[in-house]
Image (cartoon, rainbow, N blue to C red; front, side, top):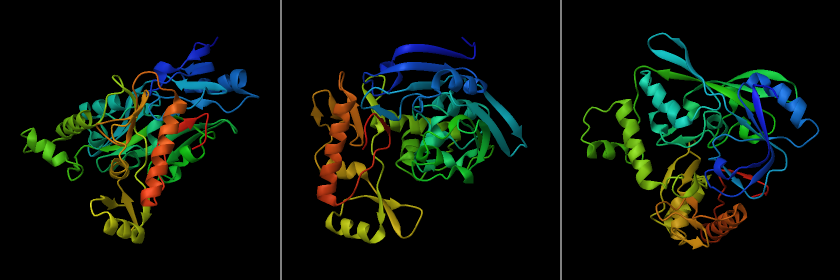
Length: 346
């Protein structure tokens, strides 16, 4: 066996997904060096279905066991590649824990990632999902995504434009089996341009007694808000927000707001479109705090599906479909899941 990767058969994945649902992989390959990926594919993947790339397991739902090889990129190097005193280019391997990376960048004197603090998952998953929170998306920070393309064997460096980022979406998510993200380079400023105007950050800083916010203090404020509003996956299984906020034509949004005056709406980057609050609609349909056996909706936040102990992925998926059906019936709006669903179609 190569020292660059480790192989386990019939591997238990319950502790490798933040929902905590039972699942097993016929073969789990943990890759310590991305340079070993060609060997891994030649020895363990060739002739079988595309492998499932598993990071922190915070953005997927196992509706059933994966059919083929599960790959986990375990390298966790971080380094500053360049710094002109104004902007730094920092690189992290795909296996680096995202929140740890945020804290590390702040410790190095860089700004930009503070609003994305405490998002579960790994650096490698961040551009795939184009993670975002509190007015910032990771695409705002990405300089280059390093990836390996199994079909061609090429190692690629894709700049921000080539990644085709969209709301909770990217080239890597749309073509899930084409690329393996191996590392990400970020462009981070030394001088912060703080985003304080979103979802209560300013109010939280005021409650903390902060008059002169810094990136580190904004990070602390974001962590306080997230811990208060969202359940901890270490305590109750969940994958964070399960549904995307739907984006609809402005005319449809206006009609919905006339019929439902409390429905929050947000800019969607295009004057012809508006983003609606999925949480508000789900709550309005009576789902917040709902429970079917061990599958439920968090009483803290209507967007978060939770596993109270022994829920199956299939049960959580059935609950999610029921929520989407009720929102469609009441508001005429389609909800889409954020996590990747393994073993079933949405």
